[in-house]
Length: 200
Image 1 (tube, helix red, strand yellow):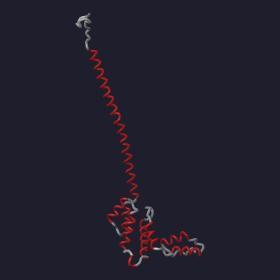
Image 2 (cartoon, helix red, strand yellow; image 1 turned 135 degrees about the vertical axis):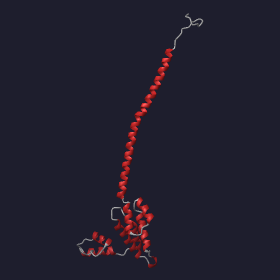
Image 3 (cartoon, helix red, strand yellow; image 1 turned 30 degrees about the vertical axis):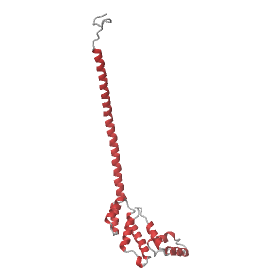
Image 4 (tube, one colour; image 1 turned 120 degrees about the vertical axis):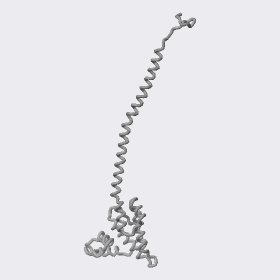
């Protein structure tokens, strides 16, 4: 029972290793048969469509799995309806493009590589780690800009207040000058009868 699924490979081995008891031979035989049971074409295509890459697993492994599932789907089609290798490569590439970050997405669309090695290299050049570094730098720049704005505001505030104070002082001085001007005038008393310059 322990060696029952050792001859399997890829997803079949992983499924058998995950679900087999490795102690009950009869039970494990049923599990292996279920794993190897023929899957309809629509179910196989659904497996390909549901396959996702989260950026943590090895990209080459993901692409190999996608190619294996798509090849399995293609082999179940009638011979006159089977896809060419180039068509399957395009489907795998389009699936990868739908899951990678924006920069890698644009580069994959531009180059349209057909080799797995080229796909891996392009995605690696625009890996999330590089994006994290860029994002961190941008955040740091924003913080520095924010602090600089605060410093400039703090420096310019006293200048504006001093300008207002200077303007206020000028207004006070103008009022004082007006007052002094009115006090400086000589007041002449006039006659209450004839309004002459002599006293009444």
